[in-house]
Image 1: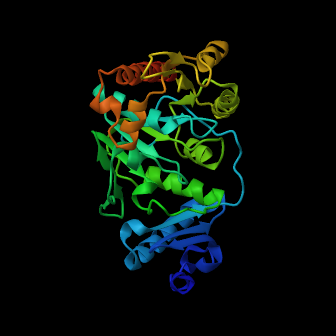
Image 2: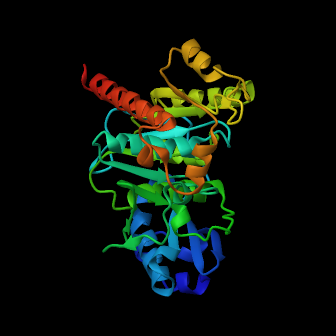
Length: 348
């Protein structure tokens, strides 16, 4: 692989030998990901080189099996210029993030059903699964296969119940562990934003990985976010991390569209008794304390888990059921929040 990159003459761009720019390589199961080191001021000069290197590798691999990203070992400043209200991606009005401070709180299930709820309102919606290490969108939407490659090596998203969906899970085998450094993750996320044929969208929902790290910064710095939805379970342990996510978006200048309390309670299917397994009302109380919208409480029910595992999201296939109505109510509140954000951005 190094020999192949050495044959790609990068001297004309004034950047030296390309092989000296290799920051990382992941090669397994017939797929390859290469990160090329670039200083922030070299972005314009390096982009044609990155594209040429990727095209060369895609001649040897399947087009969806090779990706070349640009990375900088310098950590960018935490504060990113953000002008909420209008996306800078061509054809996309709003980009919103669905985030959590902790994993395992149902964030991806929320993102999937929220996107479908927005779609049911007549909006053109896409979903980007930005969790590089643990992509969930293929399972949640019941999607299989690889994206079609358009002219210019642009990937075409898959269709999930009317939502355009893109995930690293479509191009990586389910049992493959991606051992990528943070800069490679940031570059991959940024390229999934810019090298996918999203078309015209009213809302692009971005399902972020848990935490407050590289993927979150990559999204915030690649495109202005119109807002963020924070997902938590009721207990204090999850709320502590949710507060960190809220603080991160506040630091980035991203409006919080609301909080979701997931697994709010469990109703026994045998006796009908209601159990607050993780406590109850914690996220709602936190929203009240911070003066943020509370989008709703989703109970811990077997039917939701089974539907998610089977790729049959309740917001699409059981919209009038008790849980489906909750997600559709969330979508209505988020859509109204986006309207308010956009109006504020227009006001002097």
